[in-house]
Amino acid sequence: MTTYILRRLIQVVPTMLGIFTVLFILAYLMPSDPLRAVLGEQYRRLPPEVVEGIREELGLNDSFGERYVTFLGQMARGDLGRSYILEQDVADIIAYRFPRTLQLMAGGLFVALIIGIPAGIIAAEKQYTWIDHALMVLSLLGVSIPIFWLALLAQLTLTQSRYGIALFPVAGYEDGNLSHLILPALVLGTNLSATLARVTRSAMLEVRGQDFIVTAHAKGLARRVVLLRHQLRNALIPIITIVGLDIGYLLGGSVVTETIFNWPGLGRAVVPAIERRDTPVIIGILVFGAFLFVIINLITDLVYALVNPRIRYQ
Amino acid sequence: MIAATTSRPAVIDLSEIRISNRRRFWRAFRRNRVALLGLILVILICLSAIFADVLAPYDPIEPHYTARLQAPSAEFPLGSDELGRDLLSRLLYGARISLVIGFVAQSVAITTGIIIGMISGWYGGLIDDLLMRIADVFFAIPGLMFLIVWVTIFDPNPVSIFLALGLISWPSNARMMRSQVLHLKELDYVLAARSLGASTPRILIQHILPNAIAPMIVLASLGVAGVILSESILSFLGLGIQIPTPSWGTMVNSSRGYITTAWWYGVFPGLIIMLTVLGFNFLGDGLRDALQPNQYNK
Image (tube, rainbow over all chains, first blue to last red; front, side, top):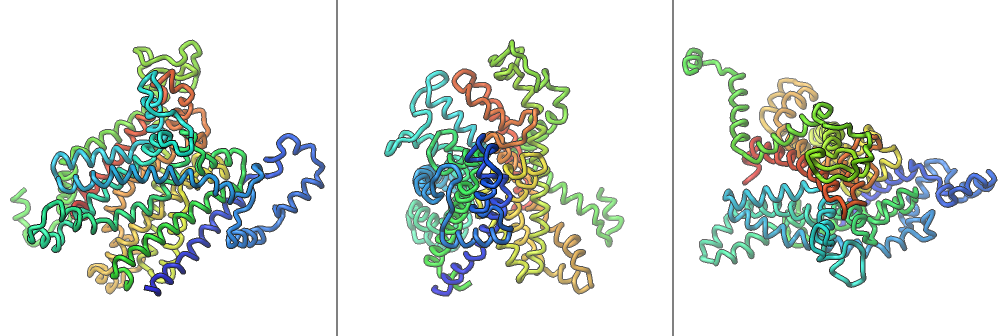
């Protein structure tokens, strides 16, 4: 087990290095002149020596190689740099905003699980009946809906009385007020719930053909017990894998959802940062997102190894 | 037909087998009503893109200030926008952008995926490790955010968007291709080809590729759906292709200010995006059922 953990941990290093490299190249290419971004109109009135001095100080005149090494050093220390415009450390911005995005992601995941898994189980149990077909068509519908449009429809019909009923607030965030979370979470979770329904269905069908299920039935166990204790439990691995891989989707989806619902999370920070060419903020959020993805998938793998000894000895 | 086959019993006509395979595929595909619906949707959208200038009742760009935000009527079947432009006409022209981006970007992604997956699976070892780690890197970076940064650097012109969408969607194609190659290269007929002295490119292209193509076709069809969706999100965020011709995502974006006064403005463009994406997803799903019945529904 220790060897497996070590091997898996070592694998993270080249992946993170690759991520840093790709993101550094993006940062290097960003058409961003922080001075112009900060100073706006005043920029043109500054004497060239002053501009040159600040550029030198920020390290913008260094060569590609020098800047790459500096960047890697910063990343290794966990230093994400400082926003050009907000006069804040990027790490502080993330620390303030990420918990809010996490609420949204958790809400979305909750919606996805609570719709997707039962739908998948029912479809598998009723394989090839009209219920199965209807659920699978619905799930394709679910992956095909553009989430920004779903958000708009939700706002149109559920937040105001002109074309619908005013059940929920249109947008915004309030600490500890769940009613603000419901619509964004529903919107963010829809695509994922459809994916999960399909994965759950095929995993359940795969397990159903195996001998131990037949044995469990032959023993005379109640159908529900076999279904939940034997079948679902063994179908969980592909389901959890998909959830792990979709962390990136949830984070990306939060850009759209947070923008529409005015939710003060990480995603909401991306678009303004892009508009202001605030490179450190953008790259910091991307590094953080990729890191989150790698860590969550690392944890999933380790949990599997813990649960299923076969994986350890591969 | 029977007479024809009995007259030359010893020789197996390969072309006939191929046709019967195709027929078998067609039969499976036709039985699947959802897949047929997908095909019809895709064909309809393609036709409306091709014949947009014939079908559109109005010019999609020129404003008509006297007919602003008209509700759907005989004059404007799907209503008009804040500059009095006919939504139906704009949607028809918008199909061109979405489809071109969907097809081209997905071709980039699927070709890259096939080539890298083939090299990775065939050679194995260090090359395989390296390529798969690169795939991991692109998997880990949140795709949408990568896209946003990319268009800031390279401007949201069509070519840069093809490249960016291709770049974020090749890893899953490469993985699928790689696993196909890993399986196929152990089979006897590949071994036979090798022992006959066939060159590596010949084995890969003549022997491996045709047998690995089915799942790739499925991935390509589903991928077009994904790419169209990604492009619409980009346009919705105001970062898509900047041309006067309307893009569906851009239309939903500009409708946001009129959500309480003109429901049709945001609803119809989104509906069209959904129908298009749904068409490709239905199609891909039906292709999967027809091309690899045993791999699905196990």
